[in-house]
Every structure is written in structure tokens, then in C-alpha cells.
Image 1 (cartoon, rainbow over the protein chains, first blue to last red):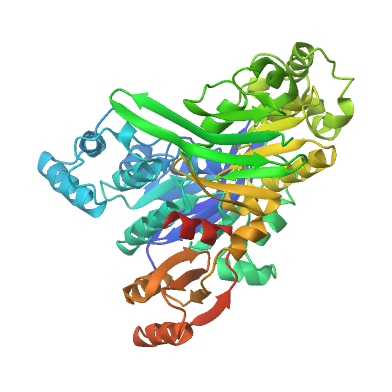
Image 2 (image 1 turned 180 degrees about the vertical axis):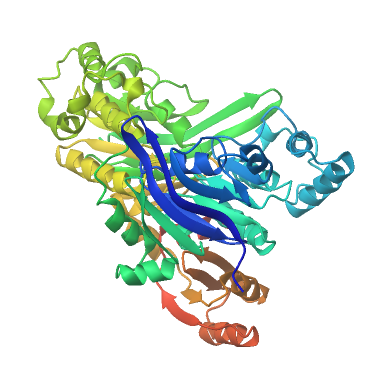
Length: 248
Length: 306
């Protein structure tokens, strides 16, 4: 049986004037998969991600996310995805539970469900007794873990993570990946960008974008074999060095 | 005289009633002409330390000097002699590339021509865009311009606060190549980063966490300080494998590292046999077990847990 596809993209393209930011990318992501979306700065990752999140209309090509068409059903897409980045995550001036309540409310969860989810999250993250702590007072690592849990508070089909672990200490970074694995085991698809190449090796499959195209897409083990490399870092350097355009 | 000396620096921040201890008595010294890395995650105190050394923040207690000048008494002399690239882009966004560079040259009573040799290689990469406003540049070009502006007066010590954060692997590699060329010009470089793999590119590093220095040494010295045997283990189901390994009470730590888990036991005896047993009992397939050399990140995590 074929696995359920959570993202399908065919010849997806975005042009800004005469600049082709994303150039006919074609790929599928399966349910529960951890999919790494790599590329140098300026390769077109952000533009591609914004299209998949329903925030930017493509110039041409097709794509569906969580079964919804990115041209016509972008509102449904927004309701069925989670998003987290290092830059945009939580409200620092709200308490932990206020943040949970706020995001769960935005996604339309009922009061009962919000209450239940809040209890569950506090327990999962070992934050019991800290309900009234302001998010600002939390160490960065905790903020990131909380932000991830809140990004999936509405049990989305897929969560987009844009460099979620930047600047976090190595132990916390690994705890964060523990949360990612758990979410994936629950059937939530993970779509993640990162500059840490060892993290790319935690993904089931990774794609590498170069100059707007997807130049490689496979499991980390296969890519390392194909490029005779010992690490994803080598694979990445090999591919990204071919780039004609820079992040400029 | 060592170009940077830090002695028992303490810095606290007060947010309403809470006190955040940013630096809890930090001491180290940087040798002339070396690339010294301050390696640690966000919130470790790296930026506070840089701000104290570049004389834009007064420490609560402790002393520090740059090129023999005291950071409090002699701040003016220090400002003439150092180059500082803050973590946040701090050039004038609505001046052009060339105008920014001219501005900083003028402030330091010099000209672009006078020290052009020093910045030439870096500046040539952004010269085609010299009339573009700095605010309109990409991240990589902003970084290069900021480095040029920090170098234009030929500083004796260069302070770079997280210059490679958010920068992709290719640009990071290029940036470090630039630093090694600057080192050959005799400039002492103090650079901070949250990327542990960059430690190996420094002559010496200080590992810093929560306002405390965990260790100061050469990258090799740090690695040789990791005394226990380290094992790399992989199997087809990595997440399950990690949980199974952690259930063994004789395991001290098990952390994922790319395609392998790195495992340390409390005592070294029969480590391989123990791992083989765990793999067999869990019916894991595709199992590989081998002893390996630790890297800086292994060392950092081991030091963090002590």
C-alpha cells in the first residue's frame, strides 16, 4: 500500500520579475515523515516554504498540503499546519499557559480541549507549577521546546520548522529532536530547515536546494553513498558549491 | 603583554525583581596573534563579555584589559585600537556600502586607501554593489561589509560576536578562511559562536555555559580531556535504540549525533558486550557498534553535566 502523502509538489515555481526564486521543484512528503529541507542562504527555501504554508501564491506548477490545493484552499492549509521558527514563536509578556491558551484559541480549540491540552503539555514538558511563569523568564531551550509543543497544539497534519534550534545548547538541541521524533511517531509530518548538518542526518529524507532547484533528494545514508561522503556536511558543501547565485 | 586579559568578571542584569547572572566570575587571557573562540549557546554570556571588553558596558565587578589598557579607565585608547563586529548588524542601513566604509575610515582618522590591502580580498566581493544601501544587502554581504568596517583602521584586536549565526555551511567555511588570512596579518581575533564544530578552527577556545567557563584549552587539549571511552552505535530504528540504551543503568549518557548515537558508560568494562546485548534483546537490525574519538560537542555536553 502506498503511504499517504501530506505534501505533493509538481513543477512548483515562483518568479519575482525576471528572477526565478523557485524553479520547478517536484517532491512528495509522506505522513509522519521527518523531511529535511536544506539549501544555502538565497537558494529559495523560504520562498518555497511560504508557498507551502499558503502565504504566497506560486507563479506556476501545482502543490497540495494536507490534501488542500495551495492556490484555492490556502485558508484550510493554514488551519491544518503548524509553524515555528527561531524568530517567531511565543509572546514573551504572556505566561506559559496564556501562550498555550492564545494559540489554541486561534486554532479554534474548545475551552474544554484547551484545558485538557494545557494540562497535558505542562506535564509532557515537566513544567508543572510554572503555569504563571512569564515566557520571557524561561531559558531559550525551554522556550523553543514550548514553542514546538504549541505549534502542534491543534494536532496539525504537518508542522513547518524554520531553523528551530539555532543557538540552543547541544543537550537541549537533542531534547528538542526527541520531541520531533515523538511528534513524528504520532503521525505528524515534520518539515524542517536547519544549518546544522548533523541534524540533517536525523531526517528520514532530505532535499538540497541549489539556485531554486532541488538538486538532490534522498535518505541521508543514500546521499552520503552517492556522493562518497562521510557526513551530510560534505554532501551539502559538494552541492551548494555549484551554486551560481549567492544569497544576494 | 597578552592582548586580552579577563579577571573575575561578574555581570548581573535585573529584570524587575529577578536577577539574571550573565557572567559569574569569568577569567581567561588571549595570546598575541591567536584566534581565540568563545564557544557556547545563546544566553551563555558571550555578548555581555564582548560588550565589556569593547568598553560599551561596565562590568559589575572584576577587571579586564585590552592591549594593556584598562576597559574602564582607558576606554578611549581601547576604542582606537580595536575592531568590533556586534552580533546584530549595526551599520548605517541608509548609507551605501562605500559611504559606510568611508564613514568608519573617517571616524578613525584614516582612509580606505591607507589600509586597503587588509580589506581588499573581502571588499572586492562586495565592490560591485558599492552604491547599494547597506539595508538592501543580503545577510552574507552585510557580514562582509561589517567586517570591512571593523578592519578599516587596522585594529590590533578584532572582536567578532557570532559572525556566522544563521549563515549557511558554505558561507561559514568562507568566513573562517577570511579569519585565517587576517590572522596572518598579525591581528588577534576573539570570536564567539554557538556552532561547536567551529571550535576546531580556533587556536584556543573557551567553552562557556550559563556565565561560567567550562574549560580553556586548544581544541586538541579539550578533546584529550574527555577521559571515558566513547562508543558510536547505529541501528535501523534509531529513536527506539536510544530509549533501549538509556534503560541500561550502567549507561552514563546517550546522545544522537547524526547517523549514530554516542554512548558513554559509567565504568568502561564490557561496554561493547553491553551494547550488543541491548541490540540483541531489542531485536534491532542493521546494528553497528564501534569505539570513536570524541568531538568538541561530546566534550561540551560532558562538561555541562558535571
